[in-house]
Length: 235
Image (tube, rainbow, N blue to C red; front, side, top):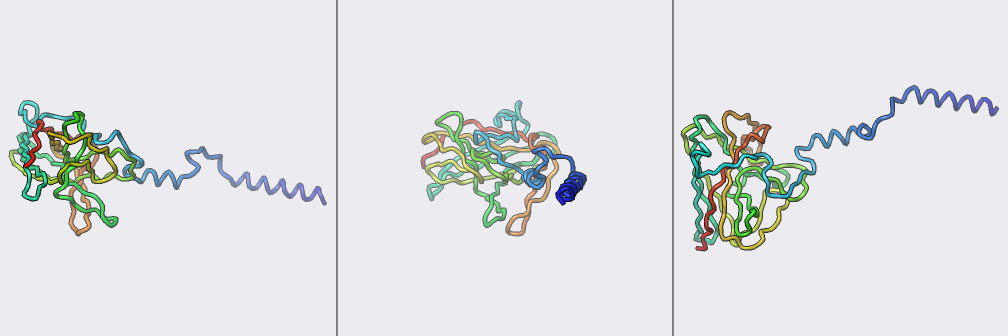
C-alpha cells in the first residue's frame, strides 16, 4: 500500500514538472506589473525640480546672433494687484516652429487648459524667480507628466502670450511639488520653449471637448528662450 502511494506521488510530481515552464527570473515573475510600469508615461519621475530635461539648449532671447527666434517680455502689476507677464515671439528662423506654451493640468480626472498659468520656480540666483512656459519636472515623484500643448508659428510671423500670478509670489507647477522660493525675489527671468522646424504632434483631448496639439517625442529637440532679468514691479 505504501509503495503504491509513493509511486503515485512520484508520478504526480513528474506531470507537474513537465507542464511547468522554465523558472522565471525576478523581472519575468510579474509580467502584469511590468506592463503596467511600461504603460505609465512617467513612472515615479522626479528631479531636483524646476529643471527642463526636455530642452537642454538654452539661448539668449535678446540676441539675434544666438537665436533666430526673438522674444520680448514685459512685466506689470494689474489693478487687482496681480503680476502680469506679456511676451511677443517673432520667428526669424525661416521655417515653422511650435511654441510649447499651452499649460494643462487635471480636474476631476480630466485635462483642462490653464491659459493664464505660468510655472513659477526658484532660480539659481536667490533674488530671481523663473517663470517658465514649457515642460519642467517637479521635485516630487509623479506617475504622469502633464505635457503642455503647442502653438504653430510660421516663418516671419509673430505670436503673443500672457500670464498672471498672485502677489506675493509663490512656487507653482501644474503637477507635483516644487521647492518654495528662498525669499522675496526682486527680479524675474522668463523662459519659453519651442520646437524648431517640422515636429510631429498628436491631439490631446480636453475636458471641454476641445483638443490641443501635443508634441511627439523626442522632446529633447526643444529649445529654451531665456530672457534677460527683469525687475519685478511693485505697483
